[in-house]
Image (tube, rainbow, N blue to C red; front, side):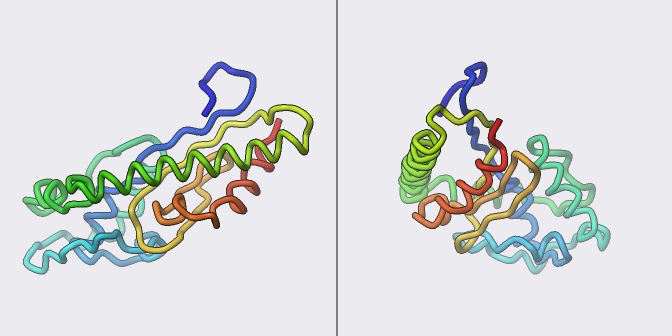
Length: 177
């Protein structure tokens, strides 16, 4: 991936609001924004005893949009005690298997990016010029969501897949300078 300041291409990767998705799954939050994104994998244990304010379901969508817009965002008021500790213990980031999977995702994603850029370079006769931000989270299935002109949300499963090339190519073509 090329570095900022180059006159070619730049793709950055970041967290797609995984903690907000964890809270959604742990508390069983439902609503248009919450239901539009698949559940996390590995599955999050449901915290049936946890009591959360009713407005949390409505606030959740705003919170997740903040997380995907500019980083973690401010947590909604009234989150039940112990969610942060449960998130740390969840295992999606702490097990050796999950660490290997993240490494595989990075390698596979990097290979696909380079292939798409190489094909565009051959077609254009020059290096493509664009910037793209990819937010990722370990949600179930091969999932892709356009969040803005130059920002997408993708599942780790899709980032590992050969099926990534088509949506990635389409987005990049729309960003070419």
